Image (cartoon, rainbow over all chains, first blue to last red; front, side):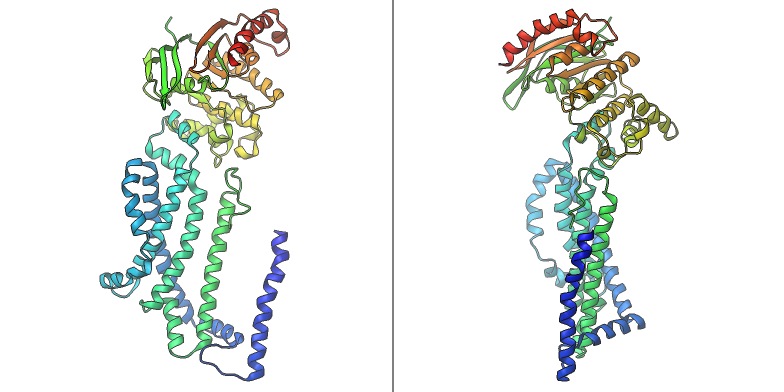
Length: 259
Length: 253
């Protein structure tokens, strides 16, 4: 922790110095640009957008689609991954289908999603769900396979059926790896949601970014970009802190290096 | 009197390898039977067969007069690798409660039963600790408490003290003898340590290797309760040790 605090200073000093230099260069040259804005204007525009609610509204749209897509894709991926790991026959049958389907870039499904769902939340949720389903399936599959076989022996000796074994032994044992899968998938979900909004769906932060660019408002564009970064960073830190807290006492999890 | 456990010409072939062959054995109710064998003698496999975790490819196994078709509540097992057999996300109390959850003990009764079992193995003050916060010896005590919670009458122990230091091991040997005497459990205990076998058992079975088969059976006619100093210095203990050691060493080489 102290190491993290000590490295925080230098880590922040470099970008701060760069921003300051950038700001001074703008002030010195008096330059006006359609593509870049002085950092102070971007920060100011972000504060204004948060205050008047316009950026908040976009954020709500993007986060709603991100979370809904993550819930659908992550939930189905977790269920499918667990079932495949627990049933050898299904695993062999599904392997090639999984390998083929997960190779499709999720964004390539945008035209299809547009045809089926039109503009709005549903198509974005669909694409986010597709994008998160595969990594969560693969990670939860390996998480369940990695459950200590001795614990399955214990479960059998105690006479637990398949459902109790799953809920009392397998899922808790796999929980740390499943949490990591959730964290990785949440990053993917945000990226895909914003990409959907940039390329097709007229809502959310991605669309806000496009409109700022089209209406030649570089300060707004930089403000939204910065804001997306803040959201992604915060979500990752929050999930990481949750993992450390939940699994702090577990000898089978090394929480000190979870990153 | 019927036998608690009967093995009738039991053999098992795993992956083309003959692990056990022609094992015939009767364990009396309440008996403390110790199986001694070098590594590779198939002693863990023997225990898994009695537990119903594996099926024999030859012969039959009866527990309480009934053929073993799979794991049963009657039979509890304490594994050697306590670090893997305990649930790291549950406290000591939670690990014991797991065995009660599977029998459907009412929630209200569980806490009292768990507390009593933890007290029985000397872990009363550690109920809220996680396995990672307990020493190896304490983790093994916890596994014994969970096995007792299962409420069976056969206790299988697979080299339970093999990974512990000598002092802890002796303390736990006495603890297991005390628990066995109090509960009247039928115990099948596996070890590679001949002295441990003689100290604990009513009867000792020597298992030869490749394939594992019974080399010799010896009744251990030593008074109970046993004592770490007195029993180990008893002339009969030393005589048995001398007799079996020759046999053991001759085949382990």
